[in-house]
Length: 160
Image 1 (tube, one colour):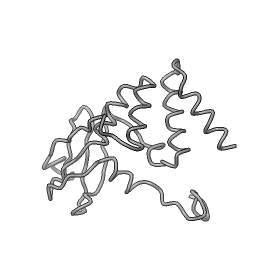
Image 2 (tube, rainbow, N blue to C red; image 1 turned 180 degrees about the vertical axis):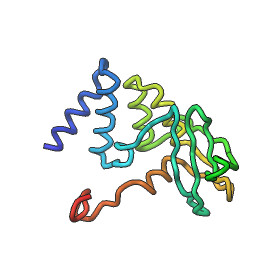
Image 3 (cartoon, rainbow, N blue to C red; image 1 turned 60 degrees about the horizontal axis):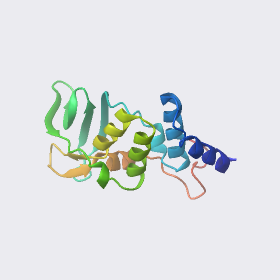
Image 4 (cartoon, rainbow, N blue to C red; image 1 turned 45 degrees about the vertical axis):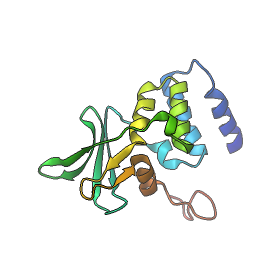
């Protein structure tokens, strides 16, 4: 049954006249079928999006902004807001690979232009405001937020 649903979603994604809400639902479904739970559930709010990750090198909390407030990484301070801001480096769509490349290509195919543009920032690079190391935002976000799967399958014993 799941295989049939996956095939149906894949076929529908090739339609050229999908409504944006339907296109987004099918996009998310394909990500879920691929086991990319974190991306099937992600907000994709590139108008006013903030992502919280840890620097993979020094482990401080880094806030990443992608939207109308700018495209930067920073340390979030309760009283002073985002401090020590560093500009993000946008990924070149031609250099994306794997799931990020599929997501960008599919978003463009579906006419979800803001999503495609936002993904180039999400899979771009951030600089840690504390140690100045550089990392791919999307990779770090997925590492921290993707549910851990058991060896028995995608749902841990006892459910979520």
